[in-house]
Image 1 (cartoon, rainbow, N blue to C red):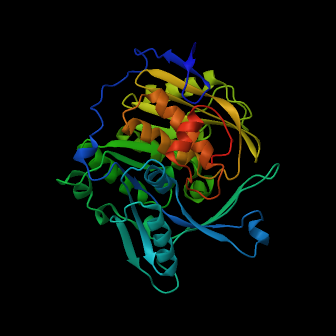
Image 2: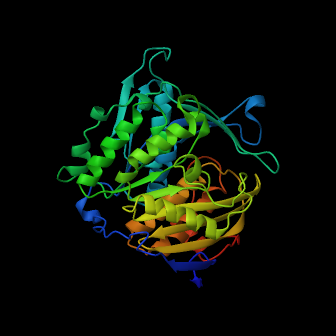
Length: 391
């Protein structure tokens, strides 16, 4: 059913969901900013990203250094683009690489009071920091990621290493939102328990919890593959309020296939995505929101980009439009941060969806995992594409 035009300039669709099949649970309002120290807290790994620029990893002679990580990118986007108070719960080995990652995070403005430093043994036999080599692709050559992240400090984090009750419950502390996801939970056998402890504490104190499925085959491959990913993610779903993913994540990481869609995702019919989301919410009726990016890759440099969400009984959609890609890594994280910003700012879900889609598109126009966009740029992009000079 066609609806009005969204803030992003694309036609937006609304359709009521049969609430006899998919309940729309009533939830308490998001806590006010005045009641919390942080607007958002992320739980996840932060790696040193090494980027060969226009070249290839295997032929490079120099690399540019960035910081990045699926959950961290959301906190950084909310801080740098949207001006919110965010923090990261993570751990680093205390050596020069860890201090470089810290320095990069300090530039991003995310609060580091929950950063745990782990003594370094001198060579990394017991603990180390993650490295992520990333080439961005061009035309027919897809992007490539080669991570080196075994035995990292955050993979060895235990639930008792963080004072969750103090973080989420102490007077003068607290957070309005907690974000974590499938990347963190794939790091080791112990990280799902850490995520569970964080999510349970957050929910006890009225903090909204979001989870990005963010399936990475390289992380799950040696520890049980898709079957293990689905087992872990399904076990955590009862603790999630807002669920993020893309077309592959829901199938690989949660076990909900897209009906009638080819394995290469060359087309993403809206009806198929809605049916899949409907099945997810029917299985987990406590979910208030499910938001998915819609991406069809014409080439590494040009993608169809849109988004769809279910929120409390209603679907909202931003139709795909072609966007030029400079560096696609982190686009989904920037979508999530824009969407979360909309809800934290008290906007309606259609506005939040348009904000997420615009922010994700802008983030993919610059290098690195993290956003370089400003809020005025996001608001302009929500009104429609424009590349006129700003002077």
